[in-house]
Image 1 (tube, helix red, strand yellow):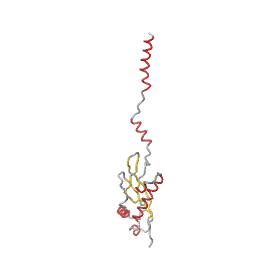
Image 2 (cartoon, one colour; image 1 turned 60 degrees about the horizontal axis):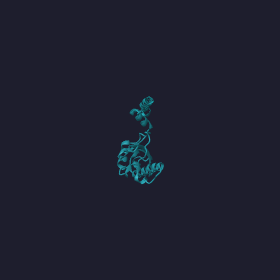
Image 3 (cartoon, one colour; image 1 turned 90 degrees about the vertical axis):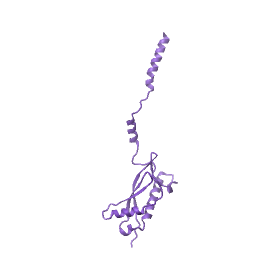
Image 4 (cartoon, one colour; image 1 turned 30 degrees about the vertical axis):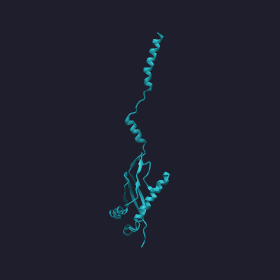
Length: 160
C-alpha cells in the first residue's frame, strides 16, 4: 500500500513538475519591438573610410582622418576652378556628401543664399568632383549602409 501511495505521489509530482520547467516563449512582435527600440538609428557602427585611414585604430581619429582627407580632396579638386572667377565673394561652400552602400560618392552643394546660380554651381561641383579613391561604406550591425553629411569646404579665393 505504501508503495502504491509513493508511486501515485511520484506520478503526480512528475506530471505537475513539468509546468515548472516550461518557459514562456516570448511573442515575436514583442521581441521585434524590443530590438527596434534598442537600435540607435542616428549612428553607425563604423563610418565610411578611405584606404589611407585604415591604419588608424582609434574610432575618433579614424573619423577625423576620413573627414580631413575628404575635405582636402574636395578643396584640391575645386581650387583654381571657375567658382572663384564666377563667385569671388564665395569663400566657403557646404557640400552634402552621400556615401551609398555600394561605395558611390554623390556631392550636392548646399547654398543658403539666393544670390548664386545654384544650377551652375551644382554643375561645376558634379563635373569637378569625380575620380575619388575607393571609399568603404559605413557599417551598421554588419551591413553596409548609406550615410549623408554636410561638409564645409573652404575655397581658396585669390583676389586679383
